[in-house]
Length: 578
Image (cartoon, rainbow, N blue to C red; front, side, top):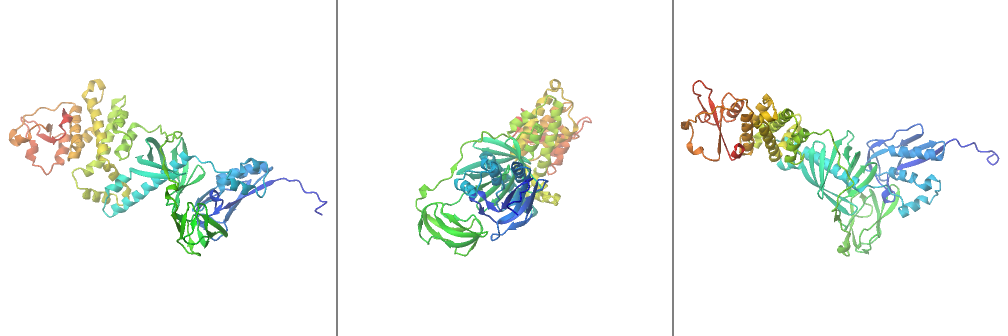
C-alpha cells in the first residue's frame, strides 16, 4: 500500500555525473576520436565506471556518454563535495573533449548548492553563458609556448639523429635546437616569442623584451612537468586541425591556428546531412549554412563572416574536424576581425627560481651550447673569495671546452661527423650534444677567454691572491689549449700560453735566438715569439699538433747541456701578450 505505508528514513544521498565526449565551450557539441588515458580511482564514497579504456576511442556515430560517476554522502551537501573532489581527480586524455571541468563549476554554483534547479536550469545557463571555467591567460599562453617549444626541439633532435645516421649534419638544424621563434594565438591576440634553451631542461622565452625562465621535464606519460609562474604545473598538449589544445592546472583551452576567414571548416567529425543554403547565396555572419550528423545528433554550423557561399563538399560526405566544407567570397574584407599583436608583458608571472644553480653550473651550460646568459656576467659570477676554488672550477671549464674543440680544431667537418657517428653508434644523441656545443663556438670561446683572463690576474699577483701552485689538471688543460690550431683558437692559444708561463713556479730562461733557423722576415710586428723547453707539457702538446712542420723550424739544441727549446709563432692576437 504505497498510500498508507510510510517511506523509510533517508540514510544516504547520491549524485551522479555523466561523463560524455562533448565540448562544453561549444554548447556541448559532440566530439569523437581516440582516448589515450583514463585515470579514475573509486573510493568508499565515490564509485564510477568507464565503457572505454586507454587506447580506446569514441566513434563519430556512437553515443557520446562513456562514463558515469556516483558520489554518496549522509546529506546532499556531503555527496556534492565528494563528487567535486572526485571530478577534480579525473584525468582523461585524447582527441575528444569532455565536460569534467565544467561539471565542477556547475556543482559549485549557489543554485545547485541550494537545490534550486529544474529541467530548464542548464539550458538557461548555456543560453546566457553564465558559467565558464576560469582562464588565466598568461599561464595558459606560457604553457602553450612551452609545450610547442619542447615539441619543436624533440622533432629537430629526431631530424638530426636521422641525418647523423646517414653521415650528414645540418648546421641549420643544430642552431634550431638552441634558439627559435614561436607564435601563439589566443582571444584575438598574437603572442610572438623568441625562445632559447639555457640548459637541458631550461627554456628562456622573450616576450616584447620581458625575459621569463621555465624548467620543463617530460614525464613517462608524455605530459610535461614545468616550473614557471611561481609554481610547478603539469601540461598536456595536442595539436589538432584547428589549433593546439593545451591543458594546464586542470583547465583546457584551444589556441587556434591563424585561419582564413573566407574558409568554412568543421570542428566536428561526422557526416554532412544537407546544405541549408544554395551555391552563390549571400549570407550574413552567423547564418546556419549546413547540417551535420555526429553521435546521433543533427547540428547546424554557422558562418563567421558575411559573403557569398560556395560548397566544397557534397551532402553525405564523411568529414573530420578541420575539413573545408565551403568557402565565402567576403562582402567586405576590411570588416573582418583582425588578429592584433600583443604588445604588453605578463607582469604577474614570476620566473622559476633554482637557488641550487651555481655560477659554475651556468658556465657549464654555456659551454654545452646553451644560452645561459651574457658571457661577461657569467665570468664575474664565477669569481670566488677562495681563489683556489676558482682555479679548480676554471680547470674543469677549460677541459669541458677542450672535450669538444679538440675534435674540431684543424680538421674538416666531414671527418669530425664520421668520427662522432662511429664513436656513438648506439647513442647518436651524444654526438648531437657535441655538435650543438660547437655550433656556439664564438660564445664559448669568449667565455673561455674570460676564464683565462681571470686566471692571468690571479697568477700575476700570486702573493696577494694566495693562490697555490697550478695543479696538474690546469697545466694539462693550458697545454692543450695552447696547441689548438687555427685562427678561431688564436687568442685562446695565446692566453693559455701566457697563463701557463705566469703560473709556472719558475720563469722560463731566456734563450739566444739562432737566426739561421728562422726567416728574419717572419720576425716582424704582429708575431708573438714564445720560447719553451721541449720537456714542458705545452711544448710537447704543440709539437704533437705540428707534425706537418719541419722540426728544424721548431726546435734547436740547448747549449751547455741545457734542454732543447721550442719557438712558437702565432699571428693576429699578439695583444694577448701586451
